[in-house]
Each structure stands twice: as C-alpha cells, then as structure tokens.
Length: 128
Image: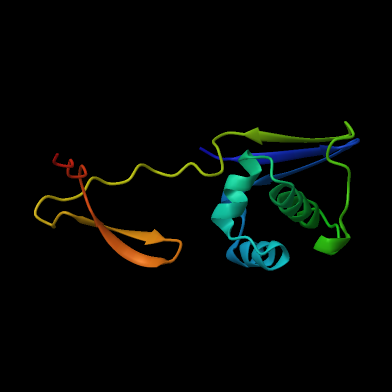
C-alpha cells in the first residue's frame, strides 16, 4: 500500500509519497532534524512538529521551493494548516518471518545501553 502525506496550507497543497523518498532525501532530513527515518516516520503518525515540518519541507522542495529547513516556519494550529495521511501508517512494516526450527532459542535485541541477547519464549516463573 502506498503511503501519501498531503499538506494543505492555506490554498496551497503539497504531497509526498513515502515510497518515493530517496536515500539522499532521507539523509537531508536526518541532517536537518537529527532524527532517523524510523523516528520521523513514527513522528508523523504522532503529529510530531519536527516530523511534520520535515516532510512538509521535503514536499515543498520537490515542487520548487528553495527555503532552507530552518527558514520554513508556519503556525500548526491556526486553522490554515492540515496534514492528511492517505494509505497505510508510516511505521507499517511487513510481518516478521517466523523463526526457523533448530536455529536455537535466542533472539538478539538492542537495548538503549548497547547490544545483548535475551532468551526467546516465556520467562521462567519464580519459585516460592
């Protein structure tokens, strides 16, 4: 499913299809915001001001606007700006493939303090 963001600001309409964002555009968005693509994708669903501005800026650039990211400013809540999410949600991902039998019982996770492994399956119940 194609995800499209449509921005209406006054009488101007800009839109962008998520699937068409190039790697160089993602890098520009990362450099401008300090946020990774997954953070920006989730942010648009959560109505993050940073994500909203980032994708609106990119949609405007694709139609010829030349302002720098930091120079774009607008009122989000004055009634003249609207964001529509058309299609799936930005963070929608294909379902994870089931683990293959015989490959062990450990899944790798990333914690905020580093990498580690945790056993798969239910936690052992405490004995009393």
